[in-house]
Length: 209
Image (cartoon, rainbow, N blue to C red):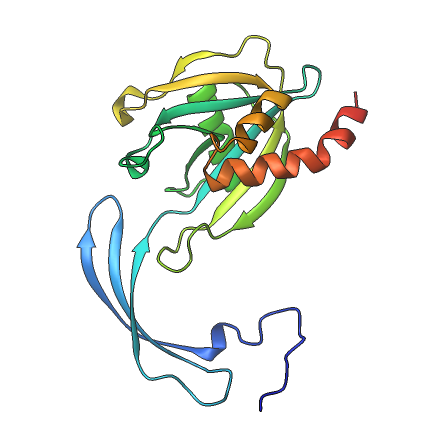
């Protein structure tokens, strides 16, 4: 009989993994590797060699733009190939977002992506969370921010032509965005996390006016 572990943090860390080998399976804009590892087990000892396929993805940032005065959020709508083949539209509502694929800081990437995708200059960034969206198969790590903005002149179509971006900017009252969350129209993790955070922090943000 094992003893129940009530420790609130993981028992193991990076020293409890032996990274044996990486085998490249695909090289392109993103990479795919087969990773061979051994790791400590809860009942003692080490696992046998385990192979896992890991999608190598750049880390990313996302920024939820919130207009305190209008109680509105600024979202981007664009086609997403990974959402094809479902019963809903593959055009998704999301925060402005982008990849960290250079030596830029996450904050600099966040500001640049917001400008490219919405035409808005985001100044002060409030960090919401850092998280792995799908750690069972992908090493991507996301930093999610909120930026307080004036949405009065925002809207229209944005994006970089060389990146084949066709982005529609939507300015929605918070209550409307929350309604889309509740009816399932908003269905991507980045925006769900950001809106749940905003629902909690919104009274405090609005009290700053």
